[in-house]
Image (tube, rainbow, N blue to C red):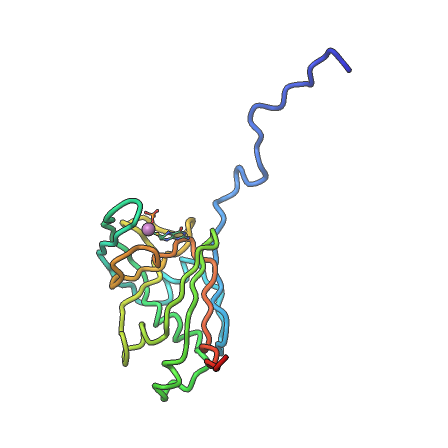
Length: 171
Ligand SMILES: Nc1nc2c(c(=O)[nH]1)N[C@H]1C(S)=C(S)[C@@H](COP(=O)(O)O)O[C@H]1N2
Ligand SMILES: [Mo]
């Protein structure tokens, strides 16, 4: 064993991205769609009309949260992706589901009917800004103004899946 201690490590270890611009997060919209999409927050801002939503939601651990969000309607974005249902048939649309997944794996389920103008017509957003701060680096966040609780406000969205509910069968 050497009595010499190992040479000190360099104090400031600069990663390869130290001088690079922050990574631009993109997320996937896939599933049973005619036109799957890969989008950034900048795309969400540039390609669809923006809504503004002051919201309050309750968190089981932190209590009530007050925020404002900006961003397009989830329905408008998904309309461009083209879910593989017959858009003229309400019963066909009413069988579709969505999952929204965050960067930490937290994910939630919505039904198509929640956002469909013929059913729940909920103004659910894909946020481009939180309290006026752009979400380009953090990633988009799901905004569910009609929810009392914050658990579906999925942040750092990485993936949205759209597809039909499997046909229920008797055991
Ligand atoms: N990706 C991701 N999004 C999430 C969560 C999470 O754990 N992961 N927690 C949810 C919950 S429980 C709440 S109340 C809201 C707000 O949480 P925050 O106050 O910690 O931001 O974010 C929601 N979005
Ligand atoms: Mo929460």
